[in-house]
Length: 504
Ligand code: FES
Picture 1: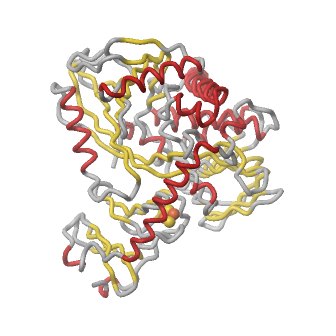
Picture 2: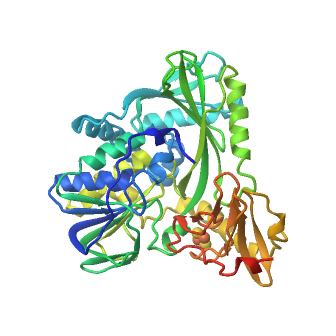
């Protein structure tokens, strides 16, 4: 599955071939990892960045690239969870992130189509107008200069009253990422195609790669969307969701260039991108989120998104591109950035993007640089991964009960009787005595079979009909058709079934 951003020039890097030492080892070369590397290297620290695949393979390239301080979790809720000062700091940190991306793009002359645009938040339904008023007041208290408009600037649909958030931005995330990677300088080295399989904590952290090389560092930052070296603690505080995006051409001028969101649950988000055709713009429409591994037919969200879009933009052309990405929702609305709980103090994580991964990733670059350089940072407490917010206890229970109920999948029969039931492109769980087997038939008709047991904490994976992947409903690990891990927290692949011919 390719996103709209995949056409960007690639910037690949060689893999690690040796044992190396550096001040800071960073695992993951998304926006969080690379911003942290850039900031630390600028201060003279030696940095090694280890990326398991090619650059841009991760979630940074699967966002809709809204750069915003209009937070998905709403300021009135953040006030309840983190207090008025916390909400203000959240607004301030996201504003700083939008500014930082613009400044870095300028500083490094990265041509990433960064531009300032306003943002419009509108009610998905007239009954949500009160919530909108509540959000306006809370955003104001958080220090944002929001205002009201009677309608979003669209020609073909009346949204009704909306809150305008000034000075948001949009950009091309992969052009930015590649630009940043090329500008790391001599202090930072980036190794792609280098999978870290172990991290031994201590005064000196020791990372081991799949190929047997080691990296020794004074500090380690795990910036891999979800931390793979933490088996339980962080995974009880966040949950994985899939979010969907479609792109359709629309006549130029029908929608004003801006960011848009509604208040629905799941909500919708929109923005424009440039088209090669001067008569039109590309309209990105996203949303229809659901918990990873918990929707039987992942074609449905695309269908629903298109239905929603056509009602509002009947003049839109054929869907040109579509994709989905993984969002990690923390139980209290804000990312976890800082020292890894129950670990050595030189071990840091960034996770729980909350649908604002590009700004949260940039905040991580600023905050972690301060922590590693031994400086105080005003956002440290707000984003501390060890924080406990009493008001989020309900959400904590809800998400963890949801994960626990998926262990009952063990008791269910398989969703196919035999491999003979599978058409090309289909996958299913087949029960073989006490075992559950994840079986799929590829487009050429070949059968791929692996244990259906997620190596993280033992849930049964589910077939993703659109991506042709195995997704875990408990904490969001994802695996390709051959069982190779694509998204953590699982560190290991699905166990292969040696004798495929013996699968029922
Ligand atoms: Fe935790 Fe699968 S991701 S059990």
